[in-house]
Length: 184
Length: 349
Image (cartoon, rainbow over the protein chains, first blue to last red):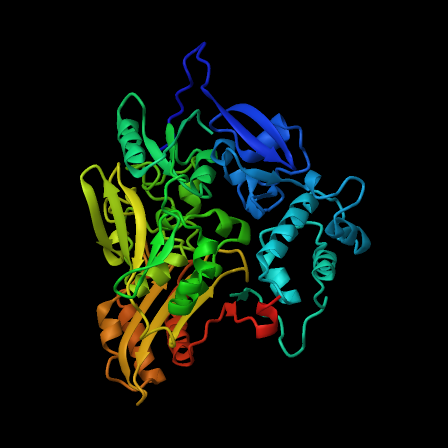
């Protein structure tokens, strides 16, 4: 069941598919091959390079964007599968020159070092807030576990996200953090 | 990724028609895509190479609805996150909520479909590494895992051709619950008991399930399980506390009388075999017994009868036995290790 490696015949033009996306509030039309991921479309076709290609396998979260307000890994979906959808990337979080509260909190809390994971962390945190499941520091940690930060800025990230969510930035001694525990 | 063509189906018959067109020699093998979280990853790694994708996301298969018998029907393309958090599932099948939320990341759970969760492939390193022999990926080339890195591999039901495990958390709960998988094909509709859905590797490890080309999962039915809802548990052991596949997981359900006797029991182990592992005798031995560690240990030993380590995964023999005993002990109290009930204040936030 190895993937067939037969190249397309010489001179063959790959079929392209028209699609429309509403990205950060404005409509964009594209014509792309079926195998273009949403991440590659955003970066290579829409010129929005804020979303990062860290692992390209859904393991690092650097490509996280919001589709219809839900956070997803844009590397693990095809652009053609999102036709007609509303996509929000890190470029769409600020309101003009007014940073999104999470962006300001990331600055205030030193929530990044190299910054490569930051756009994914921000979009993931917006998704987390939309989901409304995290109510404690531990739950924020667990529900942000799809976003890896190799600089190890996790304490700053947790401080920034909890501040914006208005929940205590420390564990409640009465409810000690149990790694791997998900609010349900 | 290989060059592929794409078809977005508008209804089930349109999807089926394109699946058949896809197995035509001219069009090459076609695959259904829903969430895409596993398939696209495998296509990037060139482990799988369909030439056509049939997108079923526009089909009306995303509903979660009560069934007339008191159970619940999960649409095939309902997302894992929506399933885990659905009020019907949370109320009637807390073990399923716990199992789903123990797996993957929030982003992936938002994308991954229920049907796709059943069809996800093993995470065996050698299956992913196209430079090594693998009978599941390239039938007849051999199994690199045997005698290799086996930390995550099977201790039950393996064959000389494949020692891979099924990686799903969700499927372990579905196995314990005795779910039924609804499948459509050009021949009509059929229902497959969950115990019969996934295969053991035998001589054909390339076949994970009993599905044939041209089959489409349309729903998963959960039978009524009110008798188990108060005494269930899902336990998962992994190398990292979050966002990691299980080394061993276990779903247990107990139906307990007021006298403390077990009326019925279900135990399913995950990440120990090519499919979620259930043994009727291990469940039967608990019926009519008082819950105590002796009874639980007997059940664990029956469930693990014939288990054999591959070297690096020998620890699973002990881990699985202890996991079963601990999960049964917790099920008496009705607790789930990996989920946390929100307080009333939090739930209203």
